[in-house]
Image (tube, rainbow, N blue to C red; front, side, top):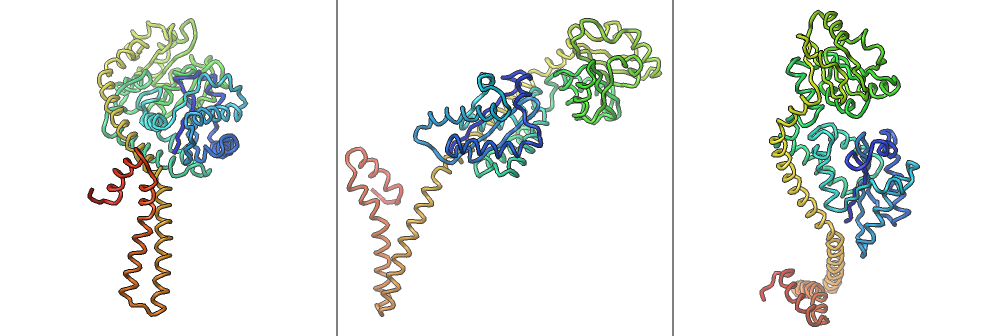
Length: 433
């Protein structure tokens, strides 16, 4: 059995490339079918099974085949090349542009990667749970498209079980391990329920997208994106069932928001002391939680002096994240240990699957022998032969046919091969030497 995972993610490729090879959710099934056809044409059926995981942070193609070519190394390189070419061809991207960013993971490395991804160990936000749901949906679509066979089905079922085990037995998702998670944690110190608050994000870059993901998971009363380019803001807001406003509307609408997170590329502050003072007055001094993740800062430092405003900078959040480092390292080590054990278990299952065709052949051969001797016995009974004699002939015939192959192999073997057979046969037939 051959397994392979090939892809790009936030560790290996910039978003400008990741977006070029992403698959819209509605195209996953079609893409899985296209991948299998591509493999069938280029590698004589390597990709008998295929699944595609595509999120904002990664695009990965998992493939499996039951055939095991003699030149495994050569075939592996061909499979990697074919997979990369498929991704490039499907999206109209030059392969030379894509290849340097691809990671290629064969066999147990592919399994280990799937387990780590589902468990949140390979995410931009360590321990985040969203990726598990995305992977389950990807597997559902691959299955519906006929992409899953015995191998990938079993691998993904074990993947989900491992993710559940990691999350239930470690603290991997319980600590502030990113700026975004720290922002949520700090806001919960001010407001009992984020679900009762109105949240505003200023900017539409990667950090804001990450923060919006975390806050959206808390189901706020409303979620708004303010951005210079309103179209980009609307595109991000749409992902979280929110709305978008223009950056120029901040002064008039700031008072409507309880939580404000800002991260733009502006060289000057976007929110000044006077703007926040007016907002606090309009809110009748209801608390406002503000996070400035920009460098240079988006919010004037003087805002922190206001009694009803809780302002945190990127450095403040960094201290919160750092305070959980030891707990995080312990949780990661525990999770990695769980994953490694489960990887070895799955690879043992894969190895056992490799002998299934041999076992089937043995059964078929044994059945053929049995039917031949049974037919001979029936003919003897039909002629009126004594039943004891028939049974004796039946048992001797079966024994002779059963032992013929091993005896012949032992007689024909020479030297080391004969010694190996002599050592193996007692184990197979449980005989004493």
